[in-house]
Image 1 (cartoon, rainbow, N blue to C red):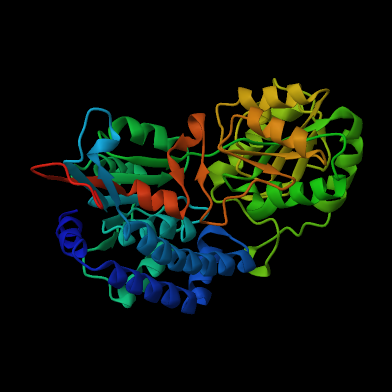
Image 2 (cartoon, helix red, strand yellow; image 1 turned 180 degrees about the vertical axis):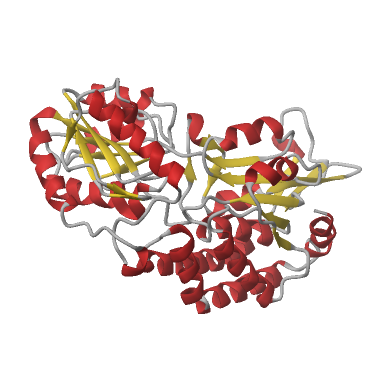
Length: 438
C-alpha cells in the first residue's frame, strides 16, 4: 500500500501518451505469452484450452483499446462560463479536468482471472492511478503471469502489486485499508460485505445474476436452442452472464425442449486439456452446492431431461423441465451446467418471474417482433437485455452493469476510466465581464 501510494504520485505526472505507450507494450507482451498463460488457466480453473487462449488475446485487445480511449477521454476537459446561469455576468471561466483517485484495489473472480483483472488494471493505469490486485485463490498463478507482462513492459516499480492469499485471511485488511481510494470487485455476495465496510470511496461491483431467457411463440427455436447451449453451458455455466433460467411460452415449450436436448447430447464432457465443452467446476464445495439444487428439484418433481451424473467436480450438463417457483433452482445461481426451464402462459408471467429475482444483471428475449422485444426489454429490471442472443459481457467497451443485488456502478472501458477519476475544477475570476467579439 505504501509503495502504491508513492508510485502513484510519480505516475500521475507521467504524460498521457507515455502511459498509453506502456499499456500498448504490455498488451503486446501479454499476447506473446498467450500460450503459457492459457496453460495456467487450463490447470488452475479447468477452462477449456481454446477459451483460455481467447481470454488472454481478448485481454490484450482490451488493454490496447483502453490506452486509446483513455487518451481521448482524459485529453479533453470542459470550459464553462458564468453568464449561462441566471443573474451572472461573464466574469468567471470554469476549467474542469479528470484527475486520478489514487490507489485502486482490484479484485477479479476465478472464472475470468486475466480478463476481469485487466478490465480494472487498464482503466486505473491510464487514468493515473496505482493498483493493488488481489487475485482469486484459484486463478492467482494466471494473474501473477499477467502482471509480470506489465512489469516487463517497463511500468514503474510499486505501481502494480499483486497480493495473493485467501480472501478470508487478507480481504478485510485490503478492503478496509485507509490507503485504498477505490475498489473494483467482481464476484459473489462477498461484495455486499465489502460495500458495508469500505467507507466513503467509489465502488464498482458486479455480484452475479440469475439471467432469464424469455422465449415467445414466434421465436426462431433453432436460434433459441443454439443460444441456450452457448449461454447456459459454455465454461460449464460458470459465468455471471450465463442463462440461468429459461421462461418459455407453453405452446412452444415441447418443441424447444427437444431441440435443446439434441444439442446437449452433443456436448463433450471431460478434461479442459482436451478442449471439452463441459469441464470440472472450480471446487468440490461448488459441486456440492449444485448437487443440492438438483436434489431439491428432483424431490419437488422437476422433469430430468438427462440423467444426473457427477464424478468429483465434473458434472454432466442437465436441463430441468417443468421447474416451478417453489424450487431453489428457480431463484438461486447454480454456477454450473444445470439449467432450469419454466413454462409460462403469458409474457407478463415471464417478466414477473424475471423481476421477482434479487438479481438484475442481464436477461434476453427471443421474438421476431421488434416492438414486443423493446417493450419487454423496458419492463425487465436488469442492467442489460439482449434481443435474440444470449446474455454476454462484451465487447469490452460496451457498458456492463447490474441492478439490485447484481452490483453497483457500471463497467465497460469508458465507464471504468470515468469511475476511476474525479473532477477537478479551476475557476478564473475576471475583474469585469468579458465577451469575445463583444
